[in-house]
Length: 295
Image (cartoon, rainbow, N blue to C red; front, side, top):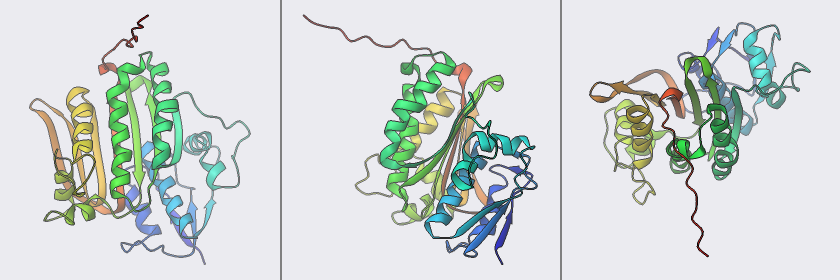
């Protein structure tokens, strides 16, 4: 008999722990060699939910777990959205609808090797964002560096070297949601190799401090996550949340600068999810710099 994982009514960062816990245990063992994901109750999915589910399926596939997707009602908007993002084309038997197509407000989730991420960002993601937001690519340069650092972090901390990413533009809410996740040992496990911490939440809070790194010869010495939070939260007024192992940390703007809230998570996350919300109405317009030619 297959293991049945019933997806929740709303698949997002709050409900992902239950989904993961039904599929794998804390020892990173699948709860069966045949796992069926039941979509019958799903009516909403956000970028975090898409990214986590995609990454979970990739994790199971790599361990030769047989996966089935059941009760996918194409009348449900959430199922239509996932179909348009190519989810069922990749993990099922093909697109559910002949009309399935990428939406103008999304960059569908991607499974990326770390070494592929820079080209994806340079040639696809940020030119697309610049066009949609009607700004120059120079206006988005710092944010591109931030996202690049997340993939650098995957390279430093993940045993898998694979990330899943999903980006959605919420035009009416003036925000962009960027969700990037990978599966491996997690930031807290890496931090404990160098520092003494009391719990996973404290480990994540330590990891985002500039100059802190679990890699003694690390490229960034902790600058990556620190730079990400400074640019997204303090300068843009957006938010960043990080989930890893049994800890989570959320950062948002406040009158004093940046408020950080580390806490224990309601479940176990095998590696790291970084969720970013950018405010599109706070992006500074910067003109492209023209190269001067000398004759």
